[in-house]
Image 1 (cartoon, rainbow, N blue to C red):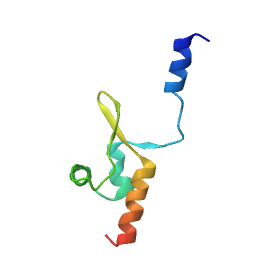
Image 2: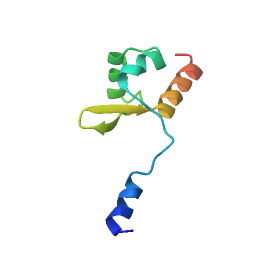
Image 3: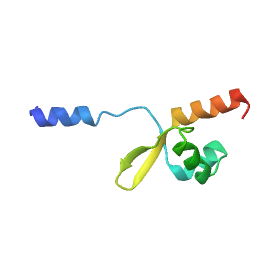
Image 4: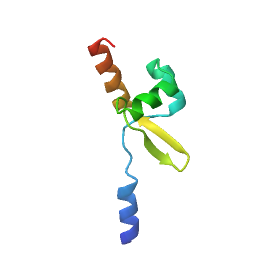
Length: 75
């Protein structure tokens, strides 16, 4: 296998992580997109990940952890 091809295959190794797009967050969390953005900017919501030049998402496991912590704290 050519060296460059091997390096590319490492970069694109698939993960089992699920990504949630912002428009799906209200259904997942019960919180509006604008509130999620305020929480994120204040450091109180998982950070978004850049998927492409015009697309972002959130790791579902981090969003679920955030929900679990809020439930545990009684928020």
